[in-house]
Length: 94
Image (cartoon, rainbow, N blue to C red; front, side, top):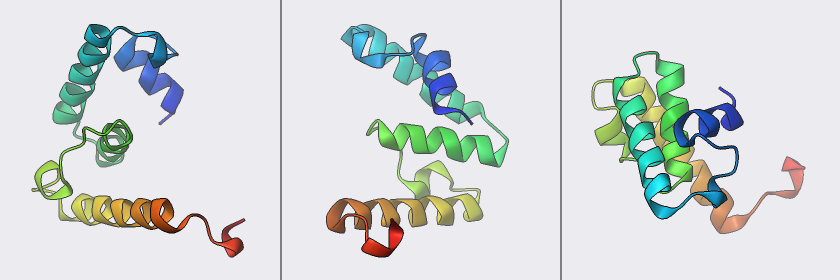
């Protein structure tokens, strides 16, 4: 999934920084609904990662309660994101 296309679709702009608070909240609501109704696992995971990037994702156990593989992938994603945030990229990752 293309991040720019997702932002354009849910927030109706290519630059969310230009949105008012109400417009931003409406975009978040659209994104949450999109996540809730999505059935294709890859797309659902992509929407969840966008929710996480925006700081509003449900916990993996809640988001993927009926999908153990996606729950595990989301937990791995959060673990990796935490390590990257805490320790930064390793020299061999360059």
